[in-house]
Structures are given as C-alpha cells and as structure tokens.
Length: 356
Image (cartoon, rainbow, N blue to C red; front, top):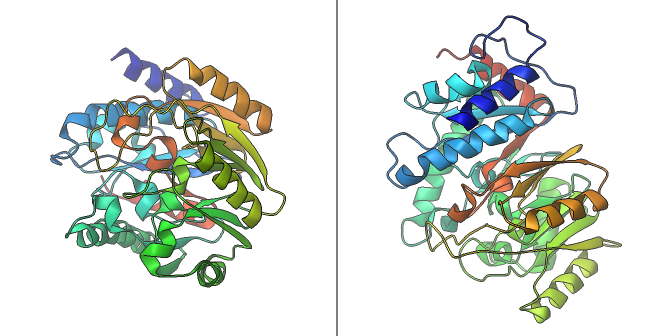
C-alpha cells in the first residue's frame, strides 16, 4: 500500500500543471513531440494463467508508470473489472478498457517504430505445441482489432516473427535470431531482401539465440542503445558462443560498437519452464530516441550495470524495478508496446474519448 500511495504522489506531481485536479479528474496530459507512448497490458481478471502473478504485474505497471511520469506517455490496457484499481492510482488518462489476451505486448504488437509493421505472432509465444499457432493468432487478432478501431498506420506481414525478436536502432539496423529463418523457411540472403523491402532497414544481423528452442528472442541477448551501438550479454561460461556472437554482429553491421554488460542471469525461479527467466538480463531494456528504461532486479550487480550503461550513452537512463515480473520470462522491453508520432496521437485520442 505504501508503494501505491508513493506512486500516486509521483504521478500527481508530474501533472502539477493542472492545479486542483485529483488523479482521476485530470484531463489527458500532453508531452513534448519527442515523447514515446509506452503501452502495457494487464491480464484479464479471470485469466487462470496469471492468477498468482496479477499483483506482481500490477505492482510492476505502477512502478513503471511512476518512473515514466514527466518523461514519456503511458497507457494501460485492461478489462472493465480491473480498470478501477488502475484508475485509482494512475487516473483515467492513463488507463483504457481494451482487454488483451496476454501481457507481452512487445511480441504481438507493432515492430519497427520508424516504419511500423505487424509480423505474424509465432506459436512459441503461446508455448508452442499443437494449438500454439492458433492461440497466437487469436491473441494477435485482438490487438489488430484495436489498431483498426484507432486507425493506426502500419504494414502487415505474413512473416512469422515476435516483436521480441526484432531489435532495431531506429536508424536502419536490426538484429534478429535465426529462428526467423527457420520459421519462414528462408536463407539469410533471401530473408534480408524481404525484410529490407518490408521494413526499410539497411543492415540486418542474424544471430544464434543463446538458448535453442522456445522463444529465441534477440532482445534477451542484445540491445541497441544508440545508432550502430550494441550492448550484449557476457557469457563467461560459453566463450565460444560469445566469440561467435561478436563475429556475426561485426560481419553484418558495419563499424558496430559493442559493449558487454554484466549478466547475472538467474533462472532459479520461473513461472513456466517454456519461457525461462529474464532476471539479470539488462539487455531487456526499453530504448527510445531520448531515454533508456533500464531494468533493475534488486541485486548487487544493478549498480554496476547502471553505471556502465550511463558511460556508454548520452541518453537519459531511467531505472525500472523489474524483479516482480522477470521470473515470468521478460521485463521492461517485453512488457512494452512503443508508439510514436501519428500512431501515438491516434491511440491517445481514442483512449481519451472512449466511454468508461
């Protein structure tokens, strides 16, 4: 309860330009032109899969909203039953009734913010197996309906790929794992040509994921923090993989700058063995043109990682407490759907005009 009250106070301070307005009464806020709209999804109130994690997810969302306040825009998509709990802390401007079937919006939303594209969400995002692809399609259909209602502009692609496997620098470079090649039955040269045409990219690196099978997302291995500047995990237990990773990145991304960040990966606690853990993976940071929202796990290595990232970029680096969700298989980036420009304006306008 103390944290909820503190977060509410932080958010009210961020909205101090509207004197006299309570959290729930304030008008929709506006940010500077360079702000990003960061969207998260709450689990449905009756979803048995997330039943034991609902409070942890709520706490993470509130903490995330508190650190974003005053920097970028934030919106929670939720169902009608959960809506009041979020509104009590965040206010109506930051919450919309648009229930989703999963919380990992990164994977089934839009990729490539400079030229948005919706790839086809893969079966592994829903755990694979016989019904995996059908379940994935059903999950993505719901966010696709929202994009249609709100009039968002983007390309659609039949290529199978999760947003977590599309790590780009907003300047024409991206990293994907080779799962993309296998899923779409493509050779590297063919895949590059197709992706360049679909997304406008200029350079694409294909890497082997550090764990084979399952999601194999690139955003658990690498992160662009600036144009052609990558942060990668350290792999002291697997120097051969680390060397191959560096070699592939340098071969595919001309003049790339690579920094290794401390990686105290902890998979001692997981919710679902199919998805592993993202605890200790600082590469799952969310990067915008001006800021980096940087996961912290309440472990000794947090400070070292934070100091490192601040040395390597001139962007503002904002810590985000992520220990309550990382054991589910993702953290800051995995939870976040990023929108900007006209698409961000359209979704915010829709949220502001929707009847509660």
